[in-house]
Length: 141
Image 1 (cartoon, rainbow, N blue to C red):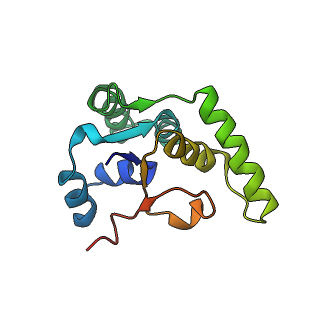
Image 2 (spheres, rainbow, N blue to C red):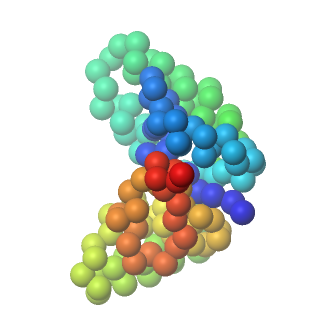
Image 3 (tube, rainbow, N blue to C red):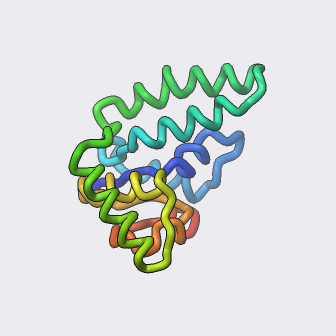
């Protein structure tokens, strides 16, 4: 079983005191079964870019480039033609069903769908109607 980690999971892991359940969930899975979407890197960079200059911004910039990208090397999934087509299908279906889906969430969901990955997120409601398997490590007992 392989998993796609949503941005909220990665962000949790760099908090000063991450949620114990999330840490435990990550530690119980094989590192090489955990994947990221390239979109997650963009979301993290967006958050870093919004910070004022200072130690936290410098630390997170270094963490992104020197730790996260290295740790997930070979397991960062780009947006491909197949993912783009699935993304368009998901967005159209969501709109038709009156369940708007953000572009970013739809790209992450499409990545999970195309690669048969289970999405790991706290934001389950953001992915309603995407027809993907989801696990919430904040609520796993």
